[in-house]
Amino acid sequence: MTKGAERASAALSQSFLDLYPAEAARVIDNRPQSEIIALLQSKPAPIGTAVFQCMAPDVAAQTLPLIESNLARQVVAAMDPSQAAGLLARVDKEARTRLLDSFEPSRAKELKLLLSYPAGSAGSLMDPRVTTFHFESTVKEARARIRGLRGRRVYDIFLVDENGLLAGVVALQEIVLARPNSRLADLSPGLPASVHAMSTREEVVELLNQRRLTTLAVVDLEQRLLGVIRHDALVAAAQEEMSADIQTMVGASKEERALSPAIFAVRKRLPWLQINLATAFLAASVVGLFEETIARFTALAVLLPVVAGQSGNTGAQALAVTMRGLALREIRLHHWLRIAFKEVNVAAINGIAVALTTAAGVYVWSQSAGLALVIMISMIISMVAAGMSGAVIPMILTALGQDPAQSSSIILTTVTDVVGFFSFLGIATLLAGMLPAG
Image (cartoon, rainbow, N blue to C red; front, side):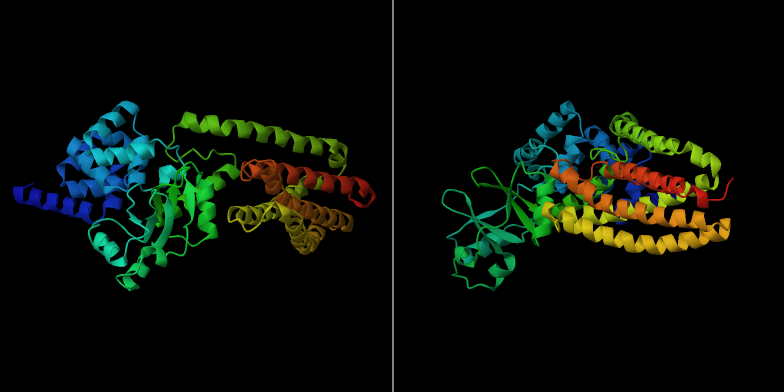
């Protein structure tokens, strides 16, 4: 390759990294660490920083302590404080201390504050770089200060009193439209929504769902303003909470990530798989109670999965709707009877419709009116029970002070299987005289 061709290739590579950092990060995530470090350090700092911010968190955390200190400082300086703290939290303690010592004192102080809060708390999500205004300040004074806040996002203006306590909030739009000599206190509608620094992510998400917030103040026990959770962090927290609920519904841990070590995933998942195995044996024991009936009428064994599958889907639908209602705070515990009644009605209507279709299919297949009647009755019973279970299980977990998403699908599967098998085989035993032998 000629020198001209090499220069053209290098320019093309740099252009790709500059224009498409996310795509470039996905490519280099799978490369050996030595290649990643060499690539990042061979490019201008702004390009290396942009690519680094798009890398997988685990890869970024392994790479950060190994790159040149100047590039590491620029990478961390370009990130939001909460994002930078989240990255540093993944780095081992010795390397983290060394990195923090190399940063500017003000930046290091911000990050140390965020790192002192537990993961998932409001303090770990906040941006401590919040500018406060005295509530007696004028609009003219506020405008002058805001003009000097270059490079800092400003949506709402937070006000404090003479003791430094949170006293109000004013939207930036109000500052723009108000008269220059107006007092900021006169523009504030009152105290803003706020959370304590140790509040959980669930509490943050609940406030986000209750109100349309662009920012959320984070305060200490004395109501001093510590920082602000901005809209992108609020949305990220809500998405994180929803994805965590999806994982816990099937027995995976909230802490597990796609790139978590295999042994960590095993420790979190295996206990619930063992519980699931025990519940599977419980369902199997129900089938064992009717071993003689199945031996006489082998067609029942063929149809068992149909009943169990249909009731399982019915329960999953009710569970998903109820879980969403709880997550969005649309329903509370005192709504349990209303929710259960609604899901029973839905399951009964759907059960009748599905049972008629199933009975018709079974009759065509077996030419047995008795077998069609058995599956029709059991289908309705099992689907009604599944609908009620899907609504009630998360309510019961909430009432017991447990996470309503925690492996609720495992409990639901047990209920639907046991009820489905017992109703189908029990009714078949009662109506054995109407069933075809063999």
